[in-house]
Amino acid sequence: METLAREHKGDAVPHRAIRRTLGPSPLDTAAQQRDQNILHIVEEAVRHREVRLAFQPVVQAQEQGHVAFYEGLIRVTDPTGRIIPAGQFIDSIEERESGRLLDCLSLEHGLRTLSQNPGLRLAINLSARSIGYPKWRKVLERGLSRDGTVAERLILEITEASAMLVPELVVQAMRDLQKLGISFALDDFGAGYTALRYLKEFQFDILKIDGQFIRGIATDTDNQVLTRAIIAIAQQFDMFTVAEFVESAPDAHMLGQLGVDFLQGYYFGAPTVEPPWQTIRTSKVVH
Image (cartoon, rainbow, N blue to C red; front, side):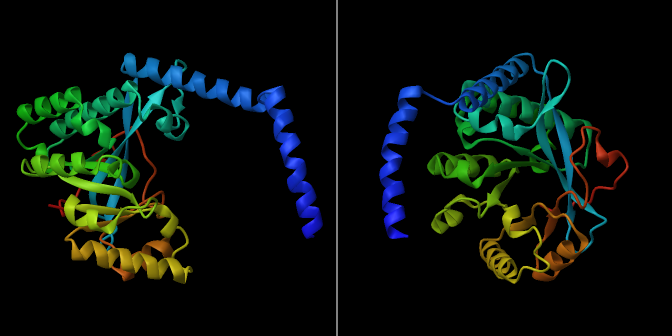
């Protein structure tokens, strides 16, 4: 086996050299072209404001018929009206101007939704890079000035990976905006490599546990232990916990037993562009 391994390792060098000579494969070229096309469509959609929010409920773990708040997920449509999955473009626009503008549109839609629905609580996603973006700040200030009740009903979600890119900026922005009554949620916790000391400095209000620890947790004892540890950390720093990607009754039951505060996932409802709170009573439990 060692001889074969050495032979194959030696063969890898000429193979790489041949590939460099021949250039990228047709599949690589096609994939790159597809990504560029999607990026162009998304940037055009942002330019023409062809975006909307889809709303997914977040329910109380102990009273699963009661919705605590909703998450507003941005949806971009192509010229035919088809929704482009965020996973196909979100990484590509993260460092672009279009990424900042998309966050502005998401916030704008969210603030309008809150203003039109007194009593509703809504979480809106954003990149940490957008917090210091002047236009995003103006959108926020304009929305808060129009309706004084919006701030205490707005939750801003920042992914773990995004927060760690500019932690000092996030910390300062959170301190300023929390004084206005705005809450912050740390999204996808456990998916990245957050230094635990930052949890104390960030002072998030809500910690959302990444779905990799949640799927199938009813029968996965390892994930039960990890989730219980995450809950303990959150409680130490006075954060509510949300379990993401809850997809079955057994998982929901187990998470309630473990002590998670809120549950979110397809088991309770898929994201919909039609406002679901028109038929579901919203419970105001997070402050």
